[in-house]
Length: 144
Image (cartoon, rainbow, N blue to C red):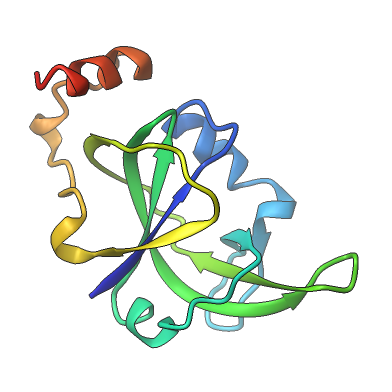
């Protein structure tokens, strides 16, 4: 299974991400779903679309930490307001927290192999939940 990883620029927390994904610019209707789905706008179309749609997720980097993922439901081309081609990635509305992992900034998105992806957090594993992201990042850098 193949995944994508992308920075959530300007997002401060998982709660902030959830709120932003409910804004009209960040949603799109899809004929297979009753409610509008959250979307991510990007320039490049993934060449490995079929592998991504076979159970892949979009992992989000927030303030230097991979914190969550959302299953990818569809990938479509779109025409931007300036007439150029773009891509939208339609996501499940469910945000799944993952074990935080430090990640340096990068542009665009990257492929992420399943074996390299952080595992999902299970209820009691959220030992750093509630700590500020800057402190979580520092603890990870120190190996704690």
